[in-house]
Length: 329
Image (cartoon, rainbow, N blue to C red; front, side, top):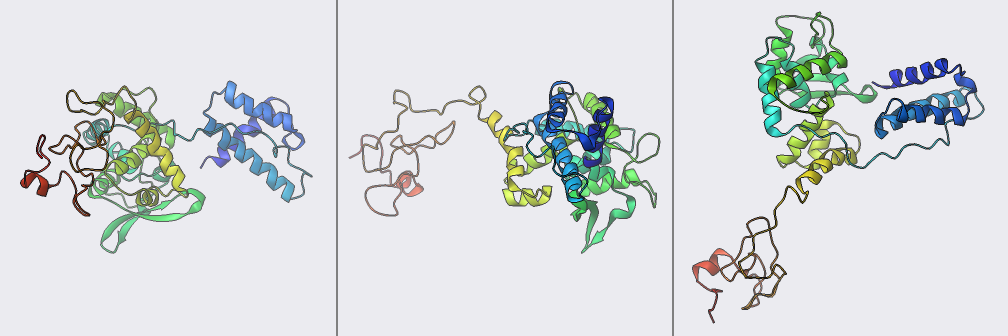
């Protein structure tokens, strides 16, 4: 979790500037926020999270009657964009990364990639897992995960993830599930270094590679496969569905960018505006994609026929009866 490290950063900043944290004013908190933005150049979401820890620290001081009021109550927080700045790996990139981890000589490379990318664990959840957390439940191999707020969840292990864990355990009966090159428990820094190494081996070019990108890839892959937003939220253990939507929105924006999409194909010589069918159809034709599904009369399939309820232009019945053909009466 980030709470302890974020508070330690604030206390260290106060010590460096000769400031007593219990005598700080609102202007001092704003100076700390400005330092995070301008000197450390953190993202707005990181600055907002670290400021939340500072606000919580002073709120506890007020509750315990150490301070009369909190100096961080009215400090302005940076605006966090509604879209996640992190973009996950593409399908081919993730397959190349999985292949590089599977073929790696280091037995501890495959397990973290599988836990993050195929199971969607957070990096502290994967690094904090132990061999004792592995087990079976109702015929499924499961992993007991301790998530945010100390919440415990049983996550079923797909066969690929189970094989990766077996390779990392290697007949051990106790100890951490993931280990670094020195045999000690792997932390997020060691996981980041191994992930960057595997990225170079796989030939993936990313400006900045970090473990959370694999969790992002897990969410976007499930959404691409047609899994409902609610099921993806449960699998990712997001408390708010808007968090899950932030993962998918950035990917959709790139997919729908004008430079990566093409206009729909319309009949030659026809206007691209919606037009009424010249025969019996009452609805307007609408493009449905790059190759528009058109009826024999040249308009989009599925619009309602005027001849009666329940009859739809462009259906198989119309084509079989050879009606709505251009020039037919």
